[in-house]
Image (cartoon, rainbow, N blue to C red):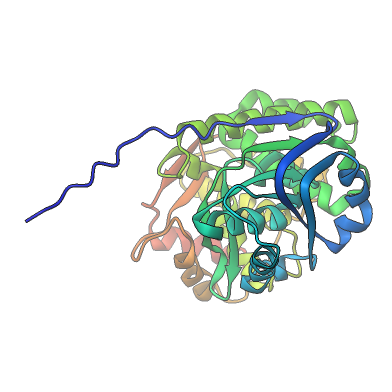
Length: 349
């Protein structure tokens, strides 16, 4: 005996990404701005001069990847319950990727889902984390293992916020830009090789190209069932590095930069890219003072940690490997010997 529930439908979750000075916006509902102490001190007054709402609250969290956890998400939810938010209420994620991910996740689960918008303040979040609807938090098992796909209603990228960005945070964002160029756009990679991203006009063009690249991929594969997984180039290795170092030694983009170098080493061993191409990627990362080396103390433990990655299964590990520059392959067919050979190389520095 069966009862069929016909739920086939088309939901339009399309939204605009605006790259420009933030315009004045009014929200005819209850709104909470979720931010952290660092961004609040630097830019909250600027944001509040641009937005107004029927009722406006500010939720301020601790700053740092180590606070991307259930306790912080509960802080957001508790404030919403205390101020009697409803399904028409809205959250504004005002910060970097950590704030954006947790705010989006809280929005996705509050009363089974409310709207939120992204106003990213770091280069990394502007070009990557704020676009595409990935939300979540970390736990003791790894990074972003608890979360949901929940698209924002809009993304506002204001270059003003980058004026106070520390140099390490800037470089971490460049790593995500490089990631997209290596996997999807050879012309963009060559542009980056010759560009000075410290020039505001050139940087704005790079942001635009990076966002267009990611938006195109997300439009093809919103829930990461196929091509979108390629945007995790460098992340399979990088997430293990972050977890091993307690999210304190490296910024996310720095760990991804090392992860790209490791993925390139694997691609070299599998004859997917040339030594010259691998060196070009490494030089571009080092141009922006990104780390490209990491000492793996226990290769076996590092290998086992791969299985906590969301893209891996019980018996296979999914790797995103470059096919030269401008293309990639997503594969779970890398034999254990090849993987261990790469890991052991990074254990002998």
